[in-house]
Picture (cartoon, rainbow, N blue to C red):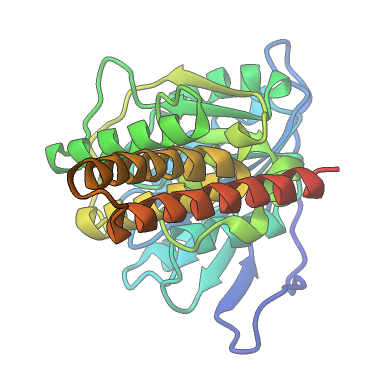
Length: 320
């Protein structure tokens, strides 16, 4: 078993929020008949997960024979419990944040330090079926991303989250013109080079998975969704439904406006033009003149239409 350098180089900010300590990495096994030729880095963001961090790492290490090389990175995101203390005893690379920076910030930090070409992310709360890792690995060479979609026989999603999840998913499907079984699953494997292309777009919060899903789908990358179960979490969730629902909605519109501007601007623009024409026709029929409100509606629609066309032109120009 080899040891990583004791003082790795980091790209931390001057306030040094990110402190990094290295523990021994997993050794690379000889390929077995059932193994793949993938070199995989597993990212595990952890915030106050002292109850399950050890069992999560242990469960993932069981699949070391399935890959050519395996690296496990635990990101201790400013935990106030014993998560960091426990993680320091595990055979992982440990990245530590002095303060809680957010789920996305942890994954971005881990992504920048990952050594291998494929990135697998999994939560440390016991919700995802880690025994399905070989299923994700099997399809990984043929897709830019393979997502464990929480559509299996056993899915323990809190009832309070279901309405918001349904609305957000339908909005994302409409704006991206793609079927999305699970928009923000935290159990997936993807190519590092593709993920790094959109690194500046990923937010620091829970919207990381939503962003990478929409970014890949709207840029025509091949994404596969495979059904998995989803268990009740260990410990307390840090998700705030109302706040996160609002943030997710704004994020979806922003990402689709970035990659698919016509889908965002054209429908409301045409609706405003139609309403303006209807209002103008009513005003002219009843009063013999065009009313100001109808004119404003129509002109607003025309302006929005041209903004969408300009954004689409810029988007295509950037891809040349």
